[in-house]
Length: 229
Image (cartoon, rainbow, N blue to C red; front, side, top):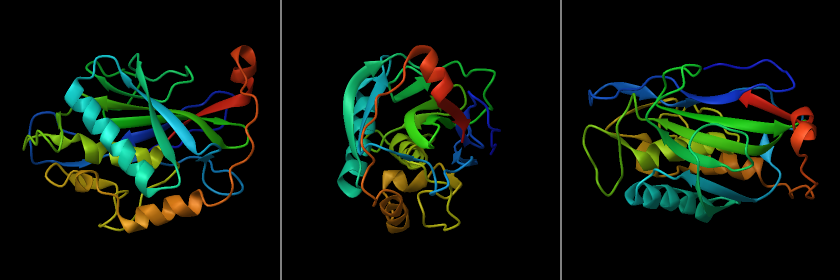
C-alpha cells in the first residue's frame, strides 16, 4: 500500500497487494486505500449520483456482473450508480468513471490484482475514479459462471467500489473491506456487510454540497489532484 505525496497532479491509487493468475489457492490482498484526507474526514464524492462506464472490450457476462454489483450498492447505500455506457480501457482523467480489464498491465503500476485511481479537487472531494483489473496476473469469473480457479468479479469489484467511495481497509475479518481474501471466498462474492454499510452511511449522511462548475483544460490541471490509494 502506498501513499502519494501532495502535488498539483499526484496519483492516489487503490492497490491490490498480491494476486495470482493461474494457481487457485494463493491468498490475494486486493485494494489498499490510503492517502491524505480532507480536514472534515475521508475523501468523498460531492454528488450522490455517480455515473460509470465499462470498457468496450468487456463481454456481456462481465457487464451483467458489473452492473449488478453497482446496482447492489445503489440499493444499500445513499449513493446511486448509473450505467452510462462503454468507454476506452485504462486509467485516464477523461471525466468518465470507468471499470476496465487490462491484458497488458502498465509497467508504472505495481503487479496487483485490481487497482483504483481517484482524482480529487482541492477541497478533497472525489470527482473521478477508474477501476482496472489485471488480467495478466489473475483470472476472473462471475457468480454465474463460478470457475473454481478464479476470483469472483463481483467480490473484487465490490471491494474496489468501497475504495472508490472513500473507504479504507477494515481490521474485521467479516468485512468486505478487509485487506486479504482467498480465491474461494473472494470478498464474500460481492455481499456488502453491515460494518461497510455503516461506514458508507457515516461518510455520506451529510447533505451534499451544491454543484459547482467543473474546471476544464488547463484550469482542471490546476484544480485537481490525482492521488494513489
